[in-house]
Image (tube, each protein chain N blue to C red):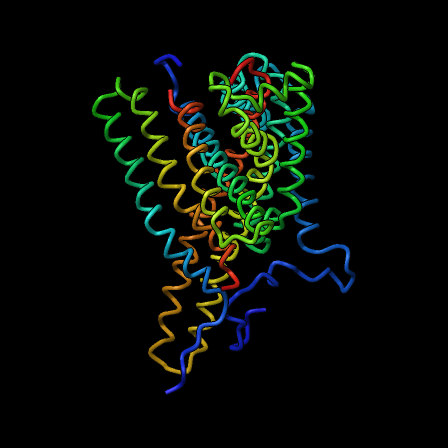
Amino acid sequence: MLAEGKTPFPPSVEDFFLPGLGGQPWISKITVLLWIGVALVILFFLLAYRSPKLVPTKSQWVAESMYGMIRDGVAKETIGHEGIRFAPYLTSLFLFILVTNLWGIIPVAQISPNSHIAFPTFLALLSWVMYNYVGIRKHGFAKYIKLNCFPPGTPLWIAPLLVPMEFFSNLILRPITLAIRLFANMFAGHLILLVFTLAGFALLGANAVFIKPVSIVAWALAIVLTLFETVIAVLQAYVFVILTAAYLQGALAEEH
Amino acid sequence: MSDDQSPRRQGAEGANAGYAALGYLMSGIGLWGFLGWLLDRWLGLPHIGLMLGLVVGTALAVYLIVKRLGA
Amino acid sequence: MTELAITGSLAAIGYGLAAVGPGIGVGIVFAAYIQASARQPESAGFNRTWLFMGFALSEALALIGVALGFVWAKG
């Protein structure tokens, strides 16, 4: 794709819509990466837990410490003791986002499915439905809405102005920001890597001879930014899970 | 909120508070600014309602943030 | 000498300029909070109110910029 001197230098949004494999429109690289990612997570846990031992084997230890990290570090810390029942959901959410994010770094794959907004949107919707369901089941519909929309301790005359804002930000804006944060980070990350890699080829193909060596700088920056993207990928997966846990905690709390 | 908080917990709380503050600001400014803009369209005013909505929305959002997040 | 022309939305450029100030401001607010609570950890809870007030007031400028950018996008 990049072999020729004619490189499409400024990368655009079209670069994210990869063609279907072998000419058919349904299955593209994104889909395949998604399947492989899901399969990897499932297979890893199946293999690690095929014959659980009291003294864990190496893969069992990795699986247990990952689950333990989310259960103790996120679910228990953020939600409290009753958060343990959400630990399986939070762990699978974390691992799914982590693996799909890391596709953006791994050579040959190098695009994250999460850079298409459909995937973050669905994950955010899942979390949104979940924390609302949990909150409504605990408090009942009317009380849940009241807890979420009525800030305690405000003067009565100002409350009508605040209630729509609370409603909007707590029940509508939250899933949107959750989805957009993940999507934007992955989208921007892929775009940045594209810019620097393609800029290297564009500089190499430049007419002036003394510009050609500058492409080394562009590629070096691309490698540095790839490492930076690794940090972003892990961090965004963690932030998504932390915020989901925080919303669950808010839905379960008696008073914010 | 006791003193023996681990850094991770503090970090999570900080992230949550920061995004909550941003959410309140966005909803306040967006909501009341939009209502003001609608008022402008309805009455044919030159952006007066919009300005008023933005300022009132900001003020309300700041009030709400300080009330909810400021300990 | 060819004529320089900028295509695209001027409002986007305007918003970019408008976001510089709040960006610096938010940075200063949080830097000051971290510094204050590192020097006097017992004042951290008390300063939190002012942290969020300062953050909200400077971030509001950027968000107002977004709103006005949409309103005046067509000139």
